Length: 64
Image (cartoon, rainbow, N blue to C red; front, side, top):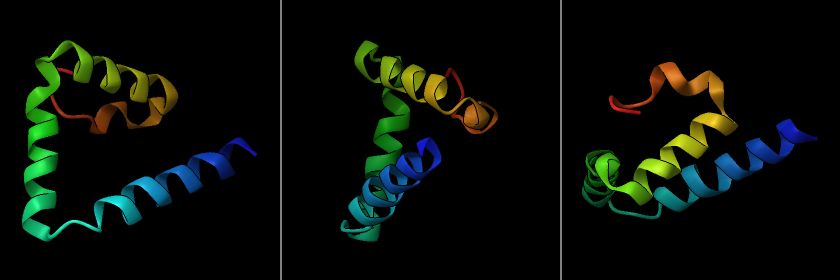
C-alpha cells in the first residue's frame, strides 16, 4: 500500500503537476528550488524528502 501511495503521489505532483508548466518555466522552477536549498524552509523540505525516500539520497542535489 505504501508503494502505491508513493507512486500516485509522484505521478500526480511531479509528472502531472510540473508538466503543466511550459518547459522554460519548469526548468526555471526546478533551478530555483535547487538554488534555494540554503533557505531553512526549502532545506527542511529536502530533508523530509530524503527521510521519506532514502533511496534517492545519492541523487539529491549538493548540500542536501
